[in-house]
Length: 82
Image (cartoon, helix red, strand yellow):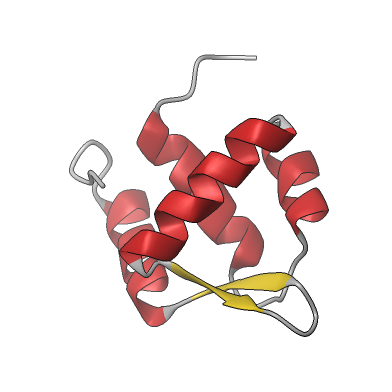
């Protein structure tokens, strides 16, 4: 597996949560991250407003701001930073 930088990991998490409400476990399997790293990235994305957490179902979903970040990341590689 190749080295992934911070922005690439963030984009993968946002892609996983885009359009769906997904659990932390599904995000871990999709991104191949450990529990602790997944938790750190999810906290960062929540603080930045890129994802939202649904308490009742314990799921995550990408916000409009997150979708905007994802579009910029996909269309202009190397331009995004969080």
